[in-house]
Length: 113
Image 1: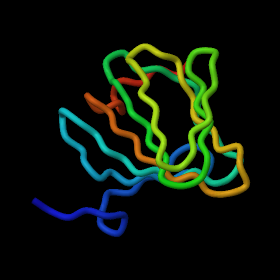
Image 2: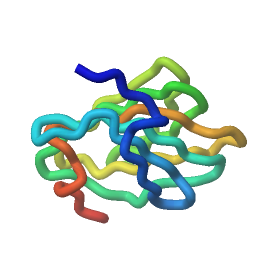
Image 3: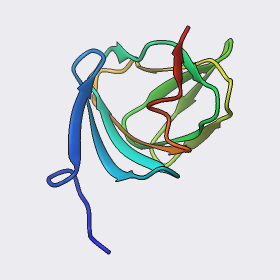
């Protein structure tokens, strides 16, 4: 058992100057903390097997699933089923910090749309 935080977690960058930190990375589950600067977005994609849960820590997230958009505020989350085409946006003027929990992990299960 080991306490984890951003200072010791594996870090990576993605998209438009966005950051990610792997808090848990096993064959069964992935827990990632991500930071999106203002006015950035992720590429529209889907996962074949992975079920994901996005949970906003601070800021405001807009998540488009198929053709419907939802706005998430701090302490709100949204589940995304396998096969659902989705994309996350930070349309605000402040940083967006959130958790992404994926089961099984999504990094090898991604199809850009």
